[in-house]
Image: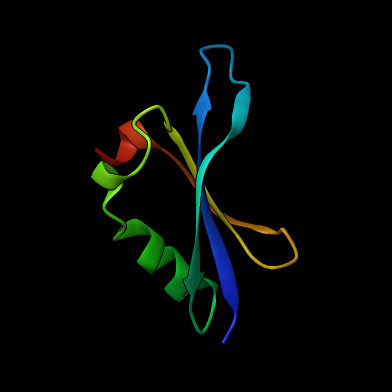
Length: 72
């Protein structure tokens, strides 16, 4: 089963993304399932500074991204 990586970082007011503050492996059958699982993650246990979230596959291809404010 493919492994995806769910990451979070701080996005500054000028749009620059800082270093990764957390990353978590998500195992899913396909990208759509991985996105669904990423959306169910409890962000209260993650670094509160992370306001930019994204999901990549093993090759580093971006499958999903979100501003934390759009989710909360």
